[in-house]
Length: 263
Image (cartoon, rainbow, N blue to C red; front, top):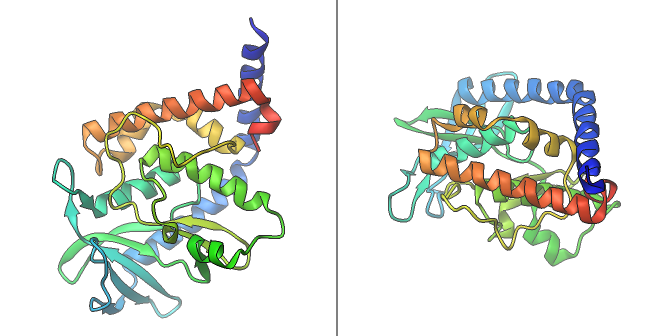
């Protein structure tokens, strides 16, 4: 066995161990997501601001309050899936959130399917207390530890390649102004059935947890979780991109070493 093969296999064992060690923390995060999903699905709708709608997705701003908690949310109902010309669909928003959960990530705000005012669509939790990446760049703001954003953007690059949704608009990246948590919104045009990686969404590094998830989650499980939202061509292209991402990460590990690539 070649030295680089030993390095990659050893790295995979370490990644799996780290992934399992963090399972308790992941479970807590998933529990909070489930609670938030239930709120979005069932909380009474107090107001719907349709007149503020902008963009091709014609999103509505919704205000929810169940008497114990209140929240703003974004509702999208446009459904023009592929092969429609200029596809845009709320189901791609649901697919992105489902994939985000499947990989144990926390990049996409909680999103559920719900009917509001006679329309079925995606209802996504509004990210309070955030600034856009566009604003951060203009103001030249930086976190105390620059690796926070570097690592987050590397994972974001991987997820953008998986969903085939490049960061064309820096306003789609939201950053919490207190803890620098990064969110990515607007996947209504994602999942085009391309089988190449994006040139403008790099990923020089990857978390050990995400690397383990990409390695460990079977293609059949991804198909099962996303088949309600994506057609067959979109699904199979996603799986090809997943393999290309892993190939690139393995090449980076061979060239630079595991410690330089996996955080």
